[in-house]
Image (tube, rainbow, N blue to C red):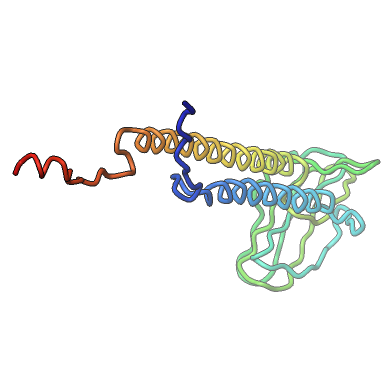
Length: 211
């Protein structure tokens, strides 16, 4: 006597639906691409953070057009910020200079440190003058250098890791739940009468006996 074949269960009957595998893959891909894009963008900004080709010295007056939507900073070459250095800015509104925090920008021969961040209230032309007790060189650049880039690099690395982790978790949970659902359906359909309702049948012989 051969064992009866297992009931056939279509993949579409199982829950959760298979589209969750696509969702898991999409999350992993999107977060990985986002992390790579952030890393490339921030690296590009870091290597071009300071305009070292346009330097100015103590007592020089630099005139430039600034926009409040694009913050700039004053950087000093080969010297850390100290009370010996001072800069001033004049222009439309009430422009100001603020503490830039700790950062660094490196070239093959120079080390640059942020001296001030520039805060302007409106777009226009502004003049900047810096002085110090020793000969110094200055340049205008973006507020973030390699220290800022290091922070963004961590974000750029964590996003793909997070995306792959979330995607793998969703895929694993989906596979386990579908497997569990399949076993439950098999058990239901292999039970007596499972999936095949019993039809009542009248017996001709029994009817004859009743007569």
